[in-house]
Length: 464
Image (cartoon, rainbow, N blue to C red; front, side, top):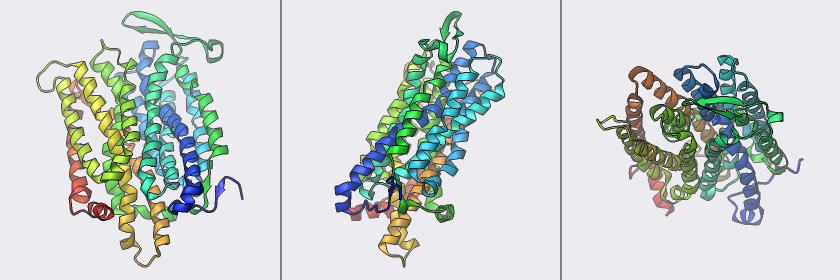
């Protein structure tokens, strides 16, 4: 048996956890983080590349650009459905290494395609879809880390993995504007392009937006292969995991996660292009990274709040805050009769990013708690150990699958903005739809989870 395979894994055993379990889990978590961060960087790199294509001579319509920004999310959401079940089948170490290595393909393709202004649109569509490989990685990464931690620390561990992973969006939006101005390795990466912005010409190396990730991807995949572990008890067939499709909570949590993570990834994809379109006199590309940075940080740093107070209660506050944030964005773009104000527009989106991060952490804290609470009813004749194992498998599968449907927001939000801009000349219609959707999410969460007599709140009180 390989030294990378853990045949005896008992995170709920305090002695085992203190003696070796916590150290092994931490190592796997902190190797997982850079792999997931790079996955998000490659997944969302189009949100920056697309905003530059017109400047270097690509004759694409605005609607085509929004489609390019949206397609990686559609692809990533679809792939997450399959990635959700891969860790129990192939093992977390093996799958993390191979899935990270696969991201070299779109990174290399971007670097080659942008150097030729005659590259046809269908090539960019193909590359946008391949970037979705990075989106798929989230489902398998979260599923994998969930197996390593005891229930008391699971919410915070998932929040750290996801939060620092989400940071890849911000890292990418910060790094790309810098690296595309550098020609230090021009003989290797190719000649610069001439960008024309407001009549001013400058040299940029847009290919660096793809090439820059390749050495880091190779290093992280190698670290995963040699440093991570597979857990024997986490092995399961697709058939065993597919029981989640019969679970009501699976579908309800998918709906709520569309509202939280779908908003985070959708706003991340649309924010740079939307701001550039609405406020052309502001160079938003220099500061767009702050939105995803705030969202990623709030996710990573607030997992403990949900562990302490209950994810369902935090989630309820999140959706109220998102409604308020959308109303502020509407005001900032002149929906209520005033003049458009960029400072309010930017601040309102920072608010939205913050609360989507909090909601991402709180919804993922809810999933294992829901499954544990429901397992005695679903398996009345099973032993506690059997219930524990089944709850871990189902929790991991639901975390992955909900992340798949949640990622649909990354496709729907840019598309909603594109259609709203095309039909009315402004984003207001899309924003009103978002506001209504958040209201339904708040209602669903209250009825099933956050009301005082809900099973989750009763179990939380019993634990205290």
